[in-house]
Image (tube, rainbow, N blue to C red; front, side, top):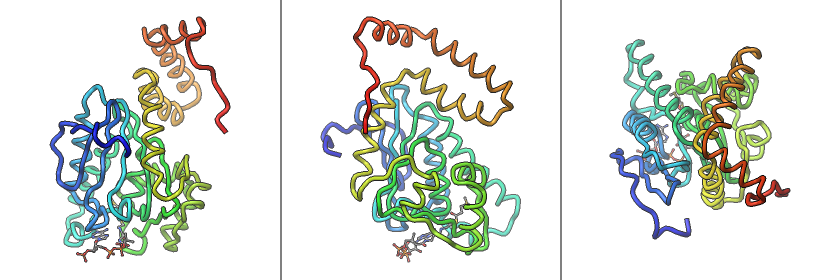
Length: 271
Ligand code: 1HE
């Protein structure tokens, strides 16, 4: 980031595998365990839950990145290698679900800038965010199949919805990896950028998302995915309810007035 001097702490106690700073309304959370390729141990997963449930109200968007050569190597395999109790296994997976729910259905949009390996639980983590940007070096894998385990961080639901069950089955059954282009075409990412440009793009998008009204962002994060999953009649009703709440907010009223009185930007073609 170019404006490093203006970065401030976020004020949440985090494990040393996570680092957080903020620049105005945008927080930047880094996976900071590069010596283990940002493998996600229990402490880190619990730290993610803490971060996303305790965000200050004035943080309006979050950028998520990984330090070092890779975004994340997924589950810390050293912590499950000695696990023999099925119930503990279920509870472990539920802990991941809780943490990633806090990301997907939190108070602010999350933009992930990906690079290097985005594998297993690392891909599950990325899938819980709202906008994903891949640098060219990015590649995706689900080595659970090769390790004799299964998805446990919500990937069966979120990754399958992003790229389809057939691709997930191929990746898990054969160990196939997708490169940045293939992942982009498959629907993992909304943006593809050159190496080293992910953070800049993420900050640019985060600033835009942070400038929306909180009610609109709430609707996009919480209502839209639920509407998409519901039966059409219930979905349409929920849409109407959400639309009415959004329209009536004082911020929306002001923005609509600004447009009608020629003070707001028009929609312009960007590319
Ligand atoms: C790890 C992990 C890990 C690295 N758990 N320690 N994930 C995987 O099966 C991916 C396993 N990792 C890899 O394939 C490679 O490490 C990478 C391709 C990601 C990176 O390779 P490289 O050459 O840069 O690093 P490295 O030498 O393999 O690893 C550096 C260190 O990180 C090394 O430890 P060291 O003590 O020998 O230095 C590795 O052991 C350690 N390391 N990845 C533990 N994953 C909720 S369910 C989710 C299920 C899953 O996520 S399954 C997929 C698990």
